[in-house]
Image (cartoon, rainbow, N blue to C red; front, side, top):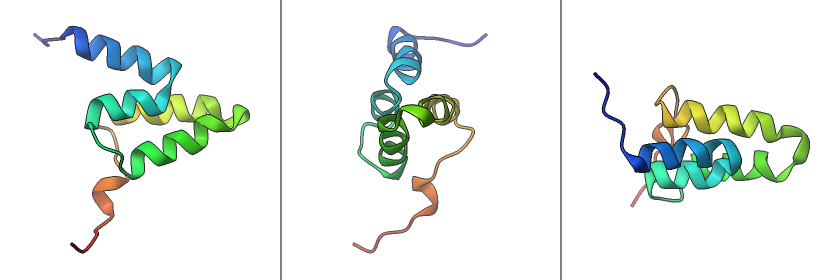
Length: 72
């Protein structure tokens, strides 16, 4: 059985309405995934792509920030 908290439900709702906020609530940091979702969300015609990206990130289907290495 899968455990679902109130925070998880809020995060999924935010992923649908405001994708960058949903990604921030999941990762609690401003990483590449947040910025990609923000850019997609700001352009009205790519908003559905931002929603798909945020939902995929929430369910850990993909992550762009995990592939970027920063020295320091």
